[in-house]
Length: 273
Image 1: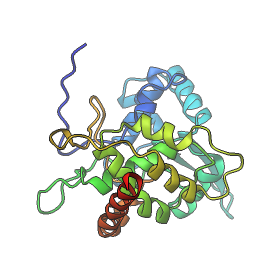
Image 2: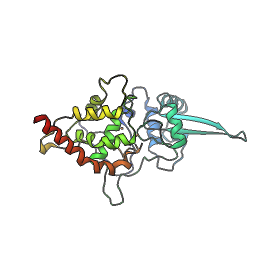
Image 3: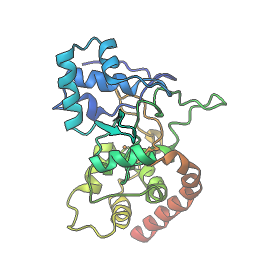
């Protein structure tokens, strides 16, 4: 099977592969969710209107809503004000959220535990170009990619709940894994397999595993930061961004990267003595 993928420079959405390949979401549910996530910032299009525009019939729409809600991608609330009037608010996200996390996002804009960036129909950072004002695309900076990869690797494992500070400090180590040719799956297995119960310090055990299981360097001519094929472009987390916003931590991780790499060099010297 041959694939030809050209990453768009603008007008794209953050779509994890887990949504596209989700075993319990129908094609209508996936289409409805992707349609909502693709809306421009500031859009306030109700789900039923998205379904109508996407050509999803009423019965299929209701089924798709149930599927999205059961998997944590859709949360729906009805409220009654003091005058007795009812209103409805909905939240869609590109990662599954618990009821508690969804309420936190609704009320504060941030989940109660570190998660990748989520989006509300009314205002979410999707569908925008990654290009900055200078025209330079910064989405592939090593430490930025490291923060994204680290957040993605531990996402979904409640034993490794890293806050934004943890991600900022550990991002240079994760980026070194990418430079050495490691895949996201390899990073996830290294961090999550065989964890003790309970994990008393997620940040400490993550740092230990990033250092202790660090893959050997690639030959200089093959050093690279892998870019997965057939994957939608991933914007900085706010937060696999971070769920939190790792883009705000990029400057700090850049400053800390040389120190981390020097520590790795000293560790190799001690090992080979």
